[in-house]
Length: 237
Image 1 (tube, rainbow, N blue to C red):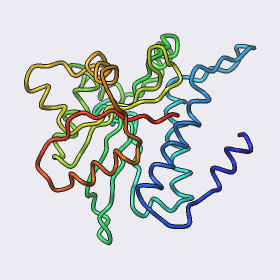
Image 2 (cartoon, one colour):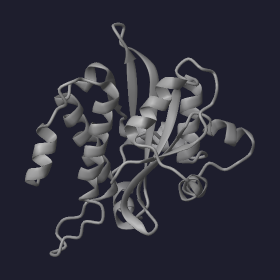
Image 3 (cartoon, rainbow, N blue to C red):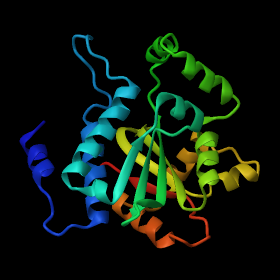
């Protein structure tokens, strides 16, 4: 870790603000993950697979948010392997309603890795537990975007799906996201919610918001029955 990154990690704003702290924590995790995307070991002894990249992002965010005492306001729940297979969700952010700590709004995150690592995928197929095999069989007729769309719609309007792309065509180390609470509406109209659909939103986006602005938009929609049309979020600088 560079000295500048250590300084950024240790720097905590004097005035506590949930949106600012969330934005800072997510951007720090994104920049940390960016360092490992596309990593090439000159000796070919170390391979950073997709699962490791996801864990690097998540654990960096959790460490930073704990340091900022953000966990008192926003929880982060990592899904088990079985839950990820069934629900298409890697983790869930929940903004808590104090003092009850009931979730006001939730963001279900699905990580999409643009670089295919077939060797790693094939290797993992032989490491599946029995429960993971059962989860895969139970959800084999649905794509991952369909799973997360169903998951969010089952919770309600205050649950948002965030598709987080690690890498994009022409910009392999970028991290961008597409967020909405109406993906299920597209499925209801017979539209495919897949990588092509999501990447099209990113490529046609005229503006990108920060993770902090994303959270502000969600909180502004709290309790409002309207759907939030897909918005694009830039996580790396």
